[in-house]
Image 1 (cartoon, one colour):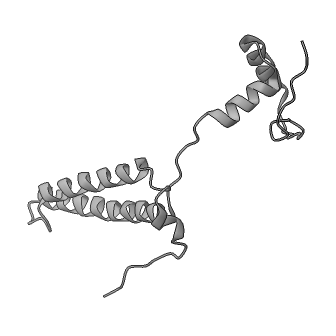
Image 2 (image 1 turned 180 degrees about the vertical axis):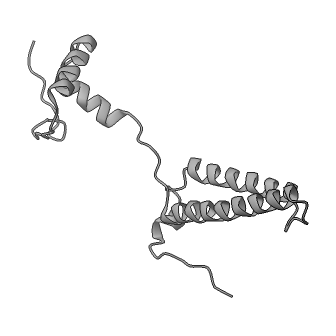
Length: 135
């Protein structure tokens, strides 16, 4: 059987060193044996074919953080409201409304954390951080 010529772009000529502990090295060797392939092929398949976690944009991370701060403030209001009710005083706010708002806030944070928005063009062009106008 004659050797087939590979495209120059497909010839593997680069070495990419990594540091492993003895245990990690042994685990890779065992997994490659179990899979019936070389350790190099196992590493290439794992590194190149497994989807990576989604990244969030700067604005999403900042919004997530800000919503967390608002949530902390809402928790303090809920606590003050509940304390006032227990003491027989007039609560500063409607407890049901605060609880509903807190649940909406948590849902917004979950939605932001789960969205894949990095691929949208307008966010890749946006490098500046924004601040809300104080009024």
